[in-house]
Length: 274
Image (tube, rainbow, N blue to C red):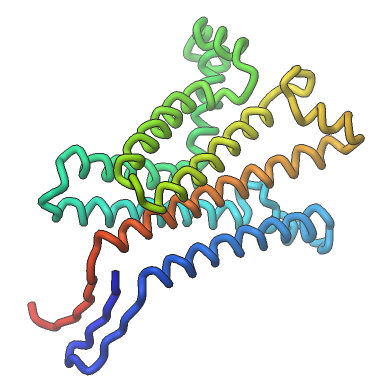
């Protein structure tokens, strides 16, 4: 795909090679994620800077840090890229309605995930579910089914509600993109992306367990290597955040590559005609 800007007087044409653009975006994202991890390790954890506000700004484990904002924006850009693919598919006469609808579903899902990440929707809904189930609100004595689920489930409450939804979307994504990317390099990027996100979710599951739980790897690592609880928990959260950003990077790269193949030549032309 070639991106071209055409001057109204046809005196200037700006061209951009999509393959090079996608490669540069991938490289910038990876380098940025490495830098964010190093800033957290040295500036925040290593206390290279004593100013608390600066350390919080570099703390990957915090939801109000630079990395959290970048992660949300990156996910939003993935959603917008999928939206462009959806709009292109609508113009493609060979694309079926189900095919077009599939791209629309993925676009809406990633846009939602960007909003969720920025507003902490799933965490807050998990807290609401726990409060209602345990009878912590004035509306009643709680929900027996909710109480039993919370007693049985060893990790965060939000996962009881959202994991079936996210898991179903993950399965749909793999099945749909396996067909769309069959025989294309985009499929490799997709597999790496989903693997990163699955590992990140598994780490979040462990993070939500009680310290004394038999499956709590944090406690096992702490006791085996004689580390502080904060050290194990902090770097577990930072690695989890980096994996989420890496997964998003690989997804974005796959979708950009695919869009560059199906879009043809895109021209931007400005005119003062009404």
